[in-house]
Image 1 (cartoon, protein in one colour):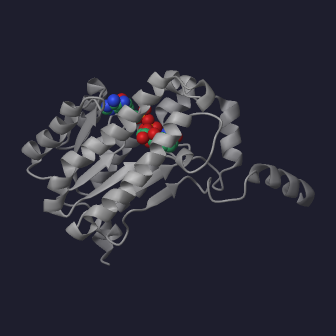
Image 2: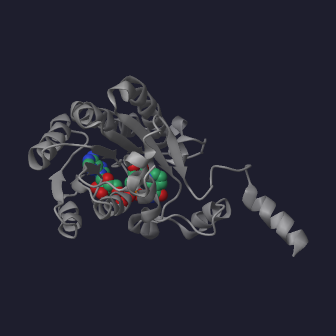
Image 3: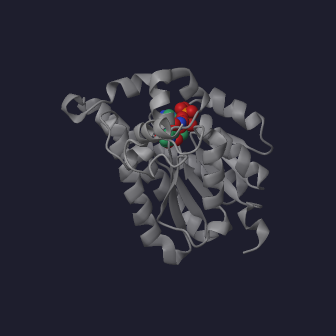
Amino acid sequence: MAHDAIRLDGKIAIITGGAGGIGAATAQLMTLRGAKVAIADIDMPRAQAVATGIPDALALHLDLEDEASIEAMVAQTVAHFGRLDILHNNAALLGPDIAQQDGNIEHMATALWDRTYRVNVRGTMIACRAALPHLRETKGNIVNTVSSLALQGHMIQAAYSSSKAAIIQMTRAIAASHGRMGVRCNAVAPGMTMTPALKEAFPPALRQVVEDETLRDQLGDPQDIAEAVAFLASDGARNITGHTVECDGGGTSHVPGLGGFRAFFEGHTS
Ligand SMILES: NC(=O)c1ccc[n+]([C@@H]2O[C@H](COP(=O)([O-])OP(=O)(O)OC[C@H]3O[C@@H](n4cnc5c(N)ncnc54)[C@H](O)[C@@H]3O)[C@@H](O)[C@H]2O)c1
C-alpha cells in the first residue's frame, strides 16, 4: 500500500453534525488530507462558522428528523461538488437535557425513545439510502459514528446506547449488501471524547471514573476520532468493511474494574 493511501485527494465528503466537536475536527482533517467537505448540521450558524475556516467547504442545513432535509443534503452536495465519495454519519441527538431524560428502560418516556431513534437510527438510514446510489458510482464509503456505550451495558442512556447498537448492525448490513458494488461501510466507536460541549457539561467526578478505566493516560479528543474516521474513509482501509473500530484509549478492551485493580496492585508495589 502506497504511503499516500490515507490521503483523500479529490474526494467529496458529507459530515453530518459537522458543526459539533468530532464532526468539525473530522471536516478539518479530511480537508487537510485533500478532500472537499459538506458540513451538514441543524445548527446552521455554527455549521457556517466551521465552514468559514475550511477552504471550499459547503455548509448545509440538516434536520435528521426530516426526511426531505436529509435527501436535500445529499442532492445539494452532489449538485455543488459533482460527486459524493464519503458519507460520515456523525450527528446524534445529544445534550445535557436529553441525557438527563435518557435513563433506564423502567423510566423511559416513549417520546424520548422515539425521538432518539428518529434522529439516530431513522436519520442515519435515510442518509445512507440517499447516498448509496452516488457511492456506488464513485466506489465510495460510509463511516458511522457510534459509541462505546453501544458495546457495553450501562445503567443510563438506554435509548442512546441501543440506537447506536442499531447503527452498528446497519453498518454490517450495508457492508454486506454493497460490498460487491465497491462500497464499504464501517463505524467508529468513540469512548468519552473531550469535545468543547462535554468539557462544559460533564461532571468532573464521573470524568474521573472514566479516566480510571482508560488505558491511555488521558481521554481522547475530537482529533483522535477524526484520525480514525479519515483512515476508514481512505483507500488505505480498502480491506476493512462492516467493522466497528473502537477508538477509546482502550476503555472497552480490558477486564471490568481495572481502575480498582490498578489501585490495588500499584498500592502494593509502590
Ligand atoms: N464526545 C463523546 O464523548 C462521544 C462519545 C461517543 C460517541 N460520540 C458520538 O460522536 C458524535 C459527535 O458527537 P460530539 O461529541 O461531537 O457532539 P456535539 O454535540 O459536539 O456534535 C453533535 C452535532 O450534531 C448536531 N445535531 C444534533 N441533532 C441533529 C439533527 N436532528 N440534525 C442534524 N444535526 C444534528 C448538533 O447540532 C451538533 O453539532 C455523535 O454521534 C455522538 O453520539 C461522542
